[in-house]
Image 1 (cartoon, rainbow, N blue to C red):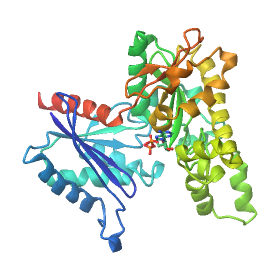
Image 2 (image 1 turned 180 degrees about the horizontal axis):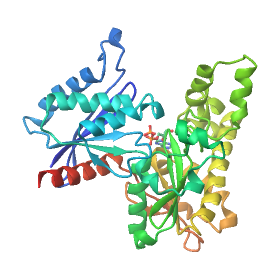
Image 3 (image 1 turned 90 degrees about the vertical axis):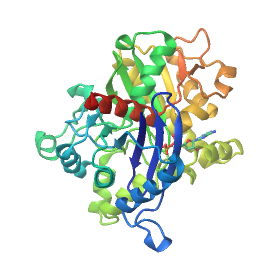
Length: 381
Ligand code: ADP
């Protein structure tokens, strides 16, 4: 089955075509700077999709798309798994827009554009939040008045679920442990970063919360901080809510501390003696170590610590720094295994490490394509 996977961001649209029979990627592309018409870019997601259609016609030489899978950031409390999209589902995704104001409207625009063009092609929504619907209430509740939850939906949702889910399955497989019995701490470290506590193969806690701002130190996001910082700065009249939203989401994290959100550049600068870069690495590694320690307790003793995504898969320096702070858990890396480059899932801990440490490359598009083919196939038959 030929599946078109669409990832609609606020101002960009990434796509991939996968043949789910063999699993291979046939073509992929990126439409950027949606809304920047002065630069000759598409005015909206409808126009962006039109460009994708034009590219696909050229690239696939007439082969038709059988189904479309959309990455949808927010599934709220309703969606615990991928769903076949119909009119009502599209409306439900749209109604969740207050929780993901930049992303859900973009996904809906993508869905409608496809419906307009290929009304008969099945479409599937795969939610970033879905994997975390198994988190128990004591972990997803914030200790705030009930009205904030009941009236405003203020609770922990969690994100990167498609990746955490995929990587959990791979890691259990690599260790030969039945997924239903698998306990692990999974760290997805990309530009956005989150860590998930996995028990019984399911998410039982995760570091991102009401929005993707909470938790780890990220490329440009602060992660955890005292909420009074925000209220105090606003009450003092020094900053507006909009200023702080931008600062905490776009100017903080590695970028705020070291001046760049690119982990490679931060690692290089630190090695060359740059104190700010060194501090950024120390803050980011320490934050992750605290989560790993906490989640080791939450899962009842992890059977694996798993690294994935851009930094987790590629930065042996950052992995080493994190592992060095986990001595109390009996964690020890095999230095050569940690250095080795590979696209394969692998173990990088020493044989006598109390907890195996793994690197498992993530592949969200493959997972979205797989789920899409499964649901579209069911709809067919
Ligand atoms: P996104 O969240 O945008 O999908 P990625 O998973 O691609 O992000 O991760 C991007 C991060 O991975 C960047 O900080 C980048 O510097 C880092 N990264 C990619 N390759 C390497 C590498 N070889 N060494 C260190 N960091 C890397």
